[in-house]
Amino acid sequence: MRDDFPTQLTFDDAQAIVDATAAEHRLPTERLALARTHQRILAQDVVAPIPLPPFDNSAMDGYAVRHADIARGETTLQLVGEQFAGRALDLRVDAGQCVRITTGAPMPAGADTVVIREVVRIEGDRITFPADFRAGANVRYAGEDVQVDDAVLAPGQVLTPARVATVASLGIDQLSVSARPTVAVFTTGDELVQPGIALEPGQIHDSNRELLMGLLRADGLEPTAWPTMPDDPERIASMLRDAASSFDVVITCGAVSAGEKDHVPALLDAHGRIRFWKVRMKPGMPLLFGDLDQARFLGLPGNPVSVFATYATLGRRLLDGLQGRTEARRVFRARLATPIDKPHARREFLRGRLEVGEDGTLRAHPDAATGSHRLRAAAMADALIVVPEGPQQLSIGSVVDVLPY
Image (cartoon, rainbow, N blue to C red):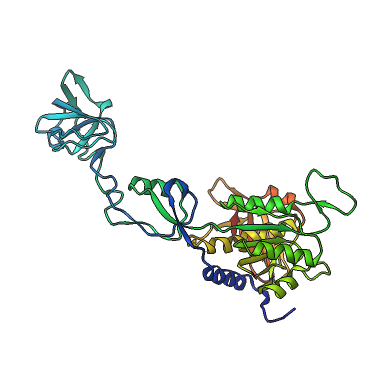
């Protein structure tokens, strides 16, 4: 193998290479009907063509009045019409008059206040109003949420349900979004058998396939699981090159360290490009990143907790970057509920649980099971606790970054 690629690099340096690679290979955009854009990454500016609300309207069921008519105490006004939500009826409220109105209905000309129906007395077409009702009460004004030509959304934002609904309220029925990356998933090793098959001595069930496929699906992607790769360099090379010719991203689990059966680094070096190999992080140090044919290649370690940590920190970052996502994933700050003593220099991502105390403080409980093979501990956790580089002795109450699952 060549030795002209970064190795044993810091976590921050690995992030920078992932970011630069993703920017270099940004995926194309596509225009979709609004209903198909949920959870996609926006690829255009959204500028308001109309105001929101588009007209002055009532926030409550009640009566539209001129505040000047009810400002001097209890007052009885003449009912001159009804305005329901829907088509405006071109009604007008003059001195001494009122109009029955429903929520969302356009305000009649001349009216500036809505008095809720629960506080009035009704005697035929004579409506009596209480004193001291605030001017402008229960009126939603045109443009108070969005003005014409306001910048509503920007490229790189995630199209959450509330954002898609906002676009719908503007009357926009299509958006440009980033294409979703196609992802091929491989697990490796002669020892792997699928769940449901009885184990022979030395075999284990393949958990990484379900772990990685689930993580990708949770991020809105539709990954393709390939057959398990045997510990045979020629077959590994054939399978990986086949996938790399037609997928945007190829992710493997296992065979990326320096053992006799860890064939993937040499194969990527021979047939593609290694951008870095081995990151000073725990778990997940043997991480391999590069290019193979048209695909970005991400070789994750074989232990399941390492798969989880490397995908959550760097794999997800690659996929976000390829789609042009500009919004950072959530990082919380929490106080440690138990101390941490870390003697090594690598950045560590500990499994843990988050809870909010009665005082409103977010607390992180590190799990005592730190082995990268201990998947059950990861299943019981709900966050990764970030312990910085260098030896660390963190006491109870120390503030740390946490990455919620």
